Image (cartoon, rainbow, N blue to C red):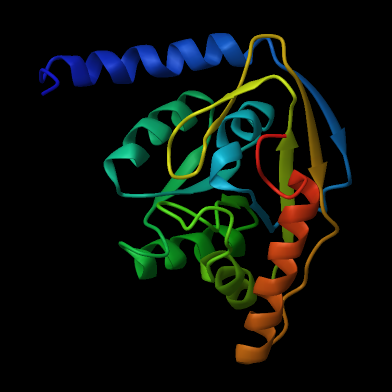
Length: 204
C-alpha cells in the first residue's frame, strides 16, 4: 500500500516532471479553429500533448471526480485551465450544467467523450448533448507522434518522448441538430471526425 505521505509528493512532482517534458515537444498544427464558444473533443489518451499545446488560453475542462481526475486537475490548473468537475457517468448532470454555463459565457470547453473510464475511443453522448443544448459547434482535435510511450491503461495514454514532433489536427466545426435524431447523428459525426484527426487511434 502506498504511504499516505507519498500521495501529495506524487501530486507535486507529477505536474513538474510532465511540464519539463512538455517544454521539449514541438507542435505542428493543421486546421482552423472557429471563434468561441465551441467544444474541443479529444480522445482521453491524447490529453497530455493537447493540454500542453493549449495552456494559458483560458480553456475550461470537464474533469472527472474520480481520483485520477485530481492529478489531471492539478496539472491543468498549473497550466492556466479552469475546470468543471463531473463526467458523463458520476456527477454527469452537474458537469453538463457547468459546461453549458461556461459555453453560454463565451468559453472554449474541452471534453474527452470516451472518458473517464471508457470504452476507449468510443464517443459517449455528453459532449454532443452539451453542444446541442448550448447551440455551439464541436471541433475534434487529434494529436499524433511517432515518438511516444503508451501506458498499459484502459485508454493507452500517450506520453510523447523528449523532443517529440507532434502533429495536431482540427476537424471542421460540427453542428448538432435538434432532438434525438440530431444527437444520434452528432455522435456519429464526432466519432468519424476524431478517428480522422487522430489517424484511427492506436499507437500513431
